[in-house]
Amino acid sequence: MEAALGLIEVEGVAGIVLAADAAVKAAEVELLGWESTGGFTTVFLGGSLSSVQAALLAGAAAARQVTPHVVAAPLSRPEPPCRQQLSFPLDPAAPVQPGALGLLETRGYAVQVTAVDRMVKAAAVEVLNVLTVHNRVVCTLVQGDVGAVREAIAVAQQALAGYEHLLGTAVIPQPMSVVLQAFGTRPSTTGGGG
Image (cartoon, rainbow, N blue to C red):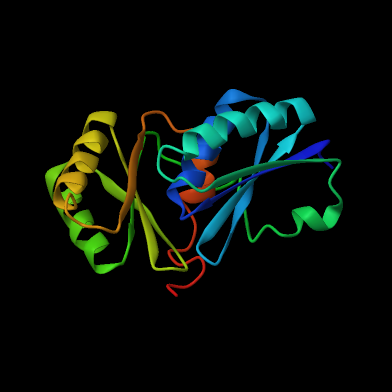
């Protein structure tokens, strides 16, 4: 059992992907997995209390790049049921490909498909995963070399410049492999498109 459990909650998905990457880069913590409910997602981190606190600070700051709703909470000596809340545990055996990671998050699916089509046609990127949560939030993860990912995200931003439900975009030039294992290999539907 971890000495501490850290939770970072955001609205949508892109924020926890950014949070998870920043957290594991900032401190010696274990990325345990994530959970989604009602349009909000939570990433779970384990480690010593001081490491978890440092990871939460870095993760919350990173998440705020794409969403204003960020809640970070450490639990000292968590009881076993706390970890049982995890529907999407990290699969350390999941294969990962190296490369930058791009995130495109919108409210609504049709516009997302159109933007992804433009990204893939404009740059040498592959769709790694499409994660959906309640409130019609859709987050597409694309991967490729950093220049191609930046180009793809720029194309998506331009295509959706006037779209009121563009929730955020981000590029992680060198994502941690555990982040790719946690978010790049999940089923395409995580909580329904409610």
